[in-house]
Amino acid sequence: MSGSKQRLHLNKRPTRILLLVSFVTLFLIVAYVYIPRSSSAGCFFFSTSSCGATFFQNALLSSPSRELTDAEVASEAVIREILRTPPVQSKNHKIAFMFLTPGSLPFEKLWDRFFYGHEDKFTVYVHASKEKPTHVSPYFVGRDIHSEKLAWGKFSMVEAEKRLLANALFDPDNQHFVLLSDSCIPVHNFEYVYNYLIFSDVSFIDCFVDPGPHGNGRYSEHMLPEVKEEDFRKGSQWFSMKRQHAIIVMADSLYHKKFEVYCKPNMEGRNCYSDEHYLQTFFHLKDPGGIANWSGTHVDWSEGKWHPKAYRSQDVTFELLKNITSIDESTYVTSDAERTVMTRPCIWNGVKRPCYLFARKFYPETLEKLIYLFSS
Ligand SMILES: *[C@@H]1O[C@H](CO)[C@@H](O)[C@H](O)[C@H]1NC(C)=O
Ligand SMILES: *[C@@H]1O[C@H](CO)[C@@H](O)[C@H](O)[C@H]1NC(C)=O
Image 1 (cartoon, rainbow, N blue to C red):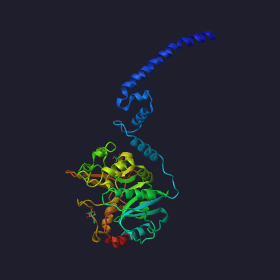
Image 2: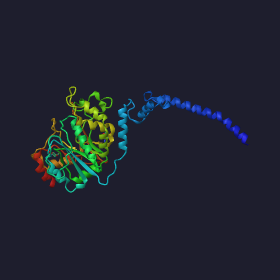
Image 3: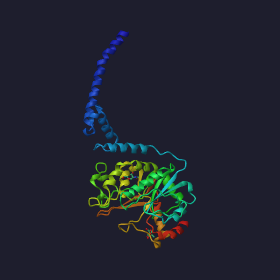
Image 4: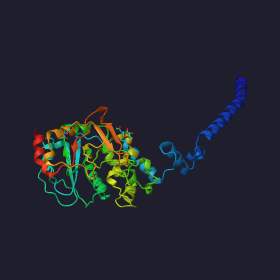
């Protein structure tokens, strides 16, 4: 019995070997034909360490046309890790209100009314770039962070934004980070703003393609290979972002450097303003589905001037505020000859809702009127 079994086994062996050899051959042929040469087919079989890295880069990252630099792979690894690890959940979610201002804040009294009664739900940070502010609201006293001088349109603006984010990240309760200017006002009450931001699944970062001179016209090929022209984005500086996003902004030095060096005013005959392109392009590249593509701060560009409309006392009416709070579509106008108007509905967690929580720009003279309208 045992002898015949042995023979049977021996008889089957050549067939098995033959099958295995044909399978391996077929596999090698298929692999040779189907794995593109550029993605280092050889790496699949001859695993050296540098070769392995290339294979994994191409398999994992969405840029098969080009081999990524070491810095890009490192950046991608860190950012992906942060994005898939939800931040430590604190028991008490707060919103960080980060004010970027030259000096005293003309609307502190209005913000004081806005914050009143919600003391455990927010923290205030003030970056005053010109002179030490005089605070009139207890919510702002002692909230000035270390600041540096900044110039309109220069990279120092982005550095100030990052300084605010870094300071606000120290408080683990801060889950959403809002950047505001001295001419910004709230257009909803605190509960509305809090729920809108804390329960949103995205960050409110304005981001769109502008093929015109004030968009792609500011792009420089020096930003290659990391930033291609087709990935260059534009948007308002006034963002609000979730904690994970604030951390990836802190973690970034690669794109930061690119924009610091190649996106600045008066460079090679063009003016590039990093505060309108760096974070917009960065989020488009790193987490496009994680941003709303509009800013939560309303601004009126309809006059078509270099600066947006700034509201005077006589402009501030109940109707104006009602108009701003009822807008539920975001609109962009490209800066090319076509001046294409793009309109998109504001979708909040799958539901169409009003787009704006804050508005600018308001002259200080509007304070009393705003306080009156706010309380009614
Ligand atoms: C924002 O725009 C990008 C395209 O640039 C898109 O992939 C993303 O889904 C948009 N975000 C939302 C929340 O719709
Ligand atoms: C409010 O919106 C209406 C309708 O779009 C417009 O006719 C009116 O002029 C707006 N009022 C203000 C004060 O902006």
